[in-house]
Image (tube, rainbow over the protein chains, first blue to last red):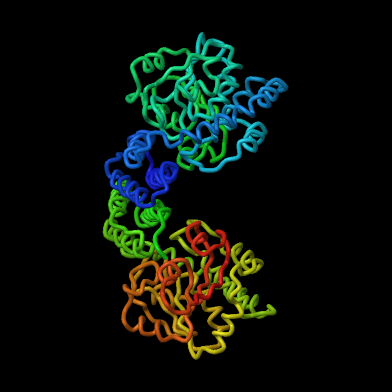
Length: 280
Length: 280
């Protein structure tokens, strides 16, 4: 997905939000906003938003000297999600369509996203998401692809969400390779986070190598790119991965909650909608 | 009021919103955002926000070649407000406290503000504002100052709002000098707008000379500054004037609807609150 004009002010907002996680020194934060303001002119609108996200978070690390500002928050999110895990398992077990319930839970976990929203109530999110219908109803196609697939490449998004991904992976009943970021960026899932979330017990965990808050193939390692191209089925979680991968020429099942007007317009849905969309 | 870090991303949002009123050429809008992005580093946090607003709107005029992008919108707002005028007069006439009702109506008009919000429903705003209590209850002080005042300096904010100001001016029962901006900036009230709104029938209209979307004394003409310092009573409408004047060392009655978190925190109230606050 290209960068829209509305993304540019939002980059500044994200800079301030993430910057404040890294430091409370107002002078450093002003310097950070000044620097990102000057970067805008070098951002072509045909870049994907996570390419800019990557530059912003590198700038934050560089200026604040903090390489992983979200470390503590990510741990809290994972612990919080793990405490909900037994209840989520029961919700799936009791439901008429276990796979669909697990898909909805995996999308509910996608709300744990400090890139876009600062505040969320995960338990409220779970109950609302389970009540809501999937807006893009590619579920039948999804099931068909899943039936045929020998294995699945599952691209994770944020760290706490990985616990919710585990619920879905258990329902896929196929070998899964779970993909994490190459290094800490915002609250996105890294190798260590995936292990903390217990993903290693249900999937093989690999790094795409990307330092961006979204999967941009040209920033990924060759092993991942090869897997991405050859996989029978790719599941992509969240907005950042959608933004990075929606232009790629292969079938991908995108699972996400729509959090901003730009994505909503791009997909043709409303903010707040929960989406299962198969590309192609 | 100083500039807060949160104002910086908001400046970019305002740039895009106002830029889109002036042009729909995406390349020009990108250039505009790039230029304002580069300006951020030159904005000290001890500037008031309207000083930056002034630079931004000058940049918009310069890049788009459009000196008054809001001209048509302002006319629509004034015409729309004038169509509501007879009903508003009746609301005042029927009320137990005519002055208080007129104050609330004048604040309701303050929602016509494209600087902060793109969309509003003025009739809904009127009924809600009349139902709401003033959050800062300086009404008794206001009445006392009004009783003592020989004349009032009334600083207008946006163009459509001037029609609502007329309702209040009629209830003040004192000679009023109504102050407009020195030139078109966003949808702020100019001399011509004040006349279109009928203010000249109830007050003497003068220009402060400022090209900013808020009253910043150092950008005003000497006649206005003299009047501002010597006036018995000053009424200031809206956020832009609050931002420009809240640090000045004289008593001012600020009437505004709080539209953003920065102002809400600065004053110690909530977004959406309606305020009558006497400084000193």
